[in-house]
Every structure is written in C-alpha cells, then in structure tokens.
Amino acid sequence: MRRKQLLEVQNKVRISRSPCFVFFTVIVLTLFFTGCSPSDNKADILVNEESNKNLDVTPKLTKKNSVNKLLNYAPTVDERRQGFWLGGSPPINKRASRIDTYYKMVASDKPNHLLVKLQFEGVKSDDAYITFKALDGAEIVSTQQLKWFLIADAVSEVSFEVKVPETLSYLTLYTSQGGKGASRAFILEETKHK
Image (cartoon, one colour):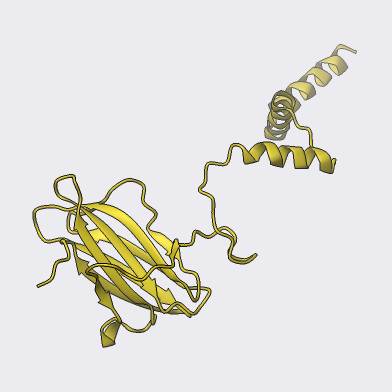
C-alpha cells in the first residue's frame, strides 16, 4: 500500500516537472491573468473599433482607391508657379519616369536653413510617387515625410525646411511612374537668377 502511494507521488512530481506541463501551466495562467474574452458579438467589435479610432495618431490620409487608401498623397495646387523656379523637363538621361520637377529654394529666417518647394507635373499613372533625401551634411528639419504618392492629372507640391552645412550639399530626388524611375540631385542653395 505504501509503495503504491509512493509511486503515485513520484508520478505527480514527474508530471509537474515535465516541460509540457510547465508550458501549458504558463499559458493557462497567462490567459487567466490577462483575460481572454474573444467576442463574436459584432456590436462589441464595432464599439472597440470606434474607441480605437480616438487613439489613432497617424496623419489623415487621402483616399485614392481601395488599394491605396493607406497611402499619403502630396498636396495638389491649382495655381501656376510664381516667381523664379528651376527644373522642369528632366535632362534626356533622366526622363524615364516622365514626371517634370520644378524646385525653388529660398533662405529661411534661421541661419543656414533653406525653405524648399518641389512641384511635380506630368503625372499620368496611379502608381506615381517621389522620394527625396538630403546628403553631404544637410538635414531635413523635423519629421518631414520623405515619400509621397502623386495624384494623376494634377500638379502636386511638397514643401519642407533643410538645414545646410557651410560646404556643398545636395538634395536627391527619385521619381517613379508606370514602373519606371528616374533620379536627380540638386545643389542645396538659394535659387537666384544667374
């Protein structure tokens, strides 16, 4: 009789020390303490989605179509360019994307800062986008978005501020449309008539 009780105790100890027992115990305790209440009630799910919308800190995005509803589109402008702009139709070796880029750089009221405006024309495809980056010690100020999608048959414009070093620095720009891309680089300096 004692031997039987001793064997039962040894089996219980063996089971409690097995990796499977420890694993399932951890899972059960985790579910118990964190609360597991899967809801099939559609009203509960909708209420939870509505309450989560208040927590959303992403910028409001422009809806282009159901596939691109989460993409950020560059703002569009109705007015023609005013003042002195450079750029336009890219050089012959940069025309793959067929997006014409115009740019303007003016001195900011802060020392060694430029206000940059980029304008894009000739967009015909829904997959068109641009990305840009500052090089050689220049820094784009704040949390500026560096990639924008472009709306077809519209003129889009992106503005931002760049901190420039005392030495020569550049802004690189990549444009893409219809699966074809093109890259360009601009010297970061105030645009003036030469």
